[in-house]
Length: 324
Image 1 (spheres, rainbow, N blue to C red):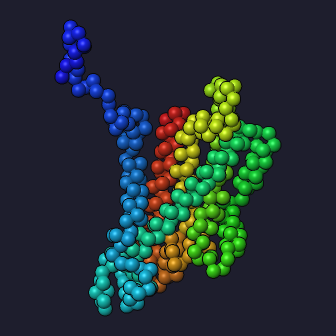
Image 2: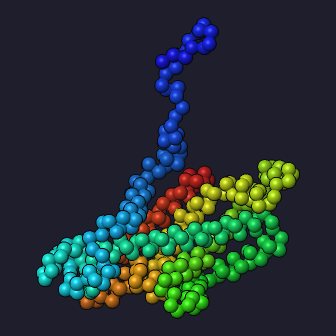
Image 3: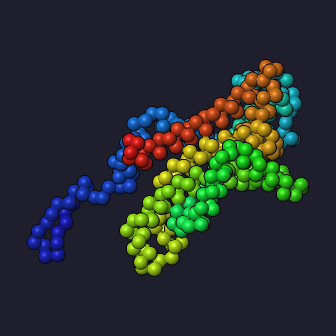
């Protein structure tokens, strides 16, 4: 293939190598991709997390049973062991059945949906609240900064799980009795989100105070841009990497917090059980020999939290040149 000018006086051969590289090719040449591809632990963690997410999203399609439909349950299937068929009904259960005859594999897939939904929603809520307060605190400063940071300092003196339990109790008490089961998931998201916003706010505040002194922010101020536009259009993109790292690590903490609350009986309702609820149910039968009711939901929660945590640790190191 040749490229000739309008006069036809010269011709320069243009080869395919001169074509601009695709986005995927440019991504493969970055240090982040090389760091990711050379770490088998992170690759394995990513694969595990993607499989769990796909299992949760496709749960209605791949679940062999509908365990929370009372009309489809058969008590004769109760306590069927893993990888075996019930001797009375001939129904096969990959991971066994619980005391009500519910398939453990199907309950795990549906429980994953609740745990992931609560965890991701709580992190998004905490991130939104923390980023806004951090930007305002770091850029505006003054008494507003003092008030926001003192609230954050007070909250950090208490364990986040205790704050989540307190907020959940208050939220559930304010909810009308006939709507408590329907609103339990949203109250849980609100409670966990309010207990996790501090890390976002403190980190964004520190980064904003650094960015505020740079020339591009001073130039925006000189030309008369509003504070909100400077904060959200110019400063926020420069702290996104740090926020992303905190969000990834906070996701694991939110999932564990939800499982803890549900395990204690103050989280997801029994009609919409999460992994924590399933672990609480399995705990009741561990001493009687039905170990699979507790083991498999616990391993699923461990794999989910560990994979997210490992990915968050790697992302923090990859985005911070000082830690490479």
